[in-house]
Length: 305
DNA sequence: AATGATGCCAACCGCCAATCA
DNA sequence: ATGATTGGCGGTTGGCATCAT
Image (tube, rainbow, N blue to C red; front, side):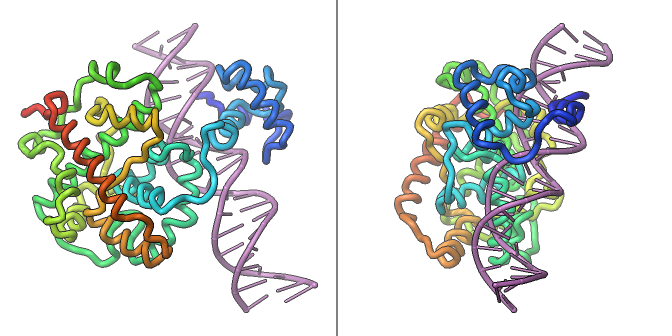
């Protein structure tokens, strides 16, 4: 394997490293604006840069790209990161795909330097998103946790699709088959985890305990995701992805789940920023109702095995 | 004012998966 | 089918800025 990394290493003698200068930025910008980036490997020489292609790509994707939002993260963005991290673990690129205009590197940095510490201060384990002292599990909890895993797979697929296509997704997605669920989940209602999230009747400890299903745990997340890469792309929320692509819509999460009830409270105390929570709740309800309608449509019905 | 500790973030590195020839 | 190439990802680091003593 000889990747961009090795490419950098092999020609280390003549290639520059370290912080980029304004001149280098201008060269890279000018070249990409005129020719597009095409092959990153050959770009540096064409653009007159003494950098490896990988360095150019990183500089472009993390800093120079015109559609990057910089600066302070909003409370809404923070919550979205935390909730997606609870589902996805350290899948920064997937999380970034759901936070329009933020780069995975920025989100990763933000998580590592701030959010992780804040959660720790709040008594929440940032790796598992569980309160430090917690116990108890049941078959039902395991099912829910597994459904959360399923939802995580869907989120990842959405992110992938959003990345892969700038075209209106409705047409493209209609040809993609929905994923086959794990065998033991087939009898369960379709994506009940979403309904649980929507239901204020479910005690918060319920989902919290679901997250403790030990057989599903991974080093970085409550959820083991080992099967995700082999899954076909779930395509339930195609319209949402399209809306996200076109209109920079952030995905909101309903404020009823255990994470929300903990986080919302803690954030209001911790950061002093309550925000328009009511409006956000309404917005979340609308989004999730829409999503539930989509996943209940024939296209997304899970096959019984 | 000096100095050490801590926070922050841009950039690098190594690995992996997809693609190509 | 296989090996080479490329792009992308996540973890880590280096260095500057800020804070605390």
